[in-house]
Image (cartoon, rainbow, N blue to C red; front, side, top):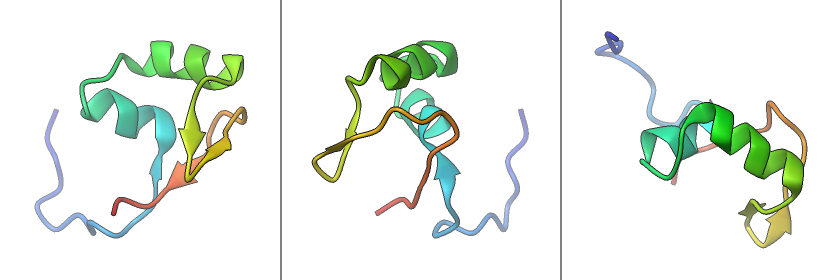
Length: 56
């Protein structure tokens, strides 16, 4: 897969993609974890698929 050279590092990214890129799990596994309510962002449980986050 090619990545855009000029990709904006501050642009929002889907949470499942972020987890997969970090090597935590696959995107499908991330979706399952999110739906099960085991993923937290800033201390809050995220259960909605398609949630976007900003990389910090």
